Length: 66
Image 1 (tube, one colour):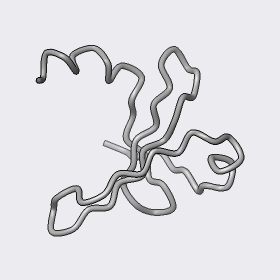
Image 2 (cartoon, rainbow, N blue to C red):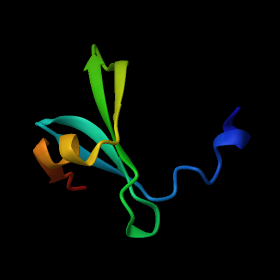
Image 3 (cartoon, one colour):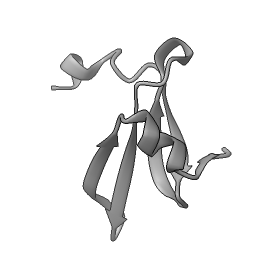
């Protein structure tokens, strides 16, 4: 399974989406979509993919620092 995913995460970066953990997927700088993650007890319980530009513009996005 991991082999099938290898290389596909290029351009994915962790971000805060409305204060919660998420992922921006923007290979070569072109935004494709944002994943908004819901985490409960340290486990991802929901993933919402947001690709509509109107919705993306309404999100509060912040870079996650190392």
